[in-house]
Length: 289
Length: 163
Image (tube, rainbow over all chains, first blue to last red; front, side):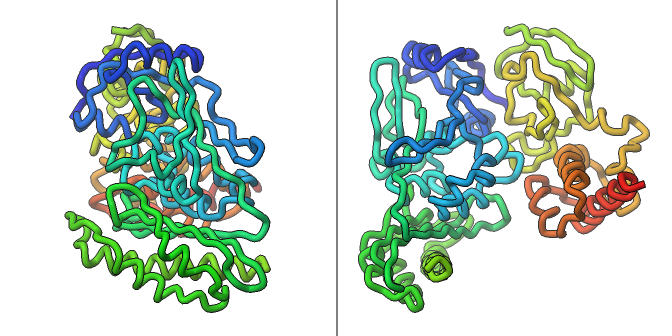
């Protein structure tokens, strides 16, 4: 199991990387940590003709930029654990990072890579959809922001065009009274998740005022749950009706059968994870009130 | 072919490689470091873990061309053929290996963890140890012995630091 031949190019600046990607079009792929791309190449499921190594570009900054937190595409997963901005503003994000692969993978894998790879079970695409993030994409000629809901089109398929590269993820900063949580189940710690649920809540006077929910494992890309988001508004934090929310959501989805879990098992699991995620978020909200 | 210079266990060598060659293969075949074991070649088993500029890295998910001018350590750098690094000794005394195929990967993943715990002057909970080694798979010995080996290496490290 070894990759097919390709040509290797080390980008010396962002413009250089974009020039190379423009030149190679369909045949060019940026490589950062390679934690998803190289397995695909070793299996020969991916056979890019040209790899553009972007590891030495200065794209690993996490900073507040007006109303958003901007995370550079080369930020390694391990960086979130001791980042005070992630801990303060994005608790569901911080929870989710614990489920990403293993320590060695977290040390090397990047957010730009995870987002561009668009594995249907990956955590960071789900986080991006949960927080209504914009994916900031550059090509030689253009910069565009694609809302996460429009970025993930199917399993391993995104809205990226040939010659384009993810340069950052922009997460809108939340209001003051908010919290969140993220739960996932996989066969073994660090494996591909069977399903995961992320929740964010805004609250006032002991009740939920606004909610967002994302689910991986119900479809080929992370989906939001608008009916549960509506259902949760007005619910008291002390008894948010989480089990009922799980049941309602599970009845509305059509998860896939695969070698890891049957559709029915996955449906039950998603109901239970929904309950847990809502309960954890509400407990955190009560602790903050 | 691309010309690269790698420093492997302190020895620098310049060589020409095809871009598609994995760091794991180059370490084994061009540098003779047969302690770099390839289990799955897709990042699931951790056997091929080496240190790239001091940090654990899966050498089956790394192209050698990416490592030009980098410094790499393999399991051979720990205790040589006598395997007398403290963590290697602890693996022996705590029954942390049988067939040994996964052992180089476990060692290269766990040595920085043990060092970090000794710096922090604390003995980690078993759960932390299991999390630290969650990217490595052992198919014959099981994990209890490896967990005790890590605990012993940290304990010994703290004792010798205090002495």
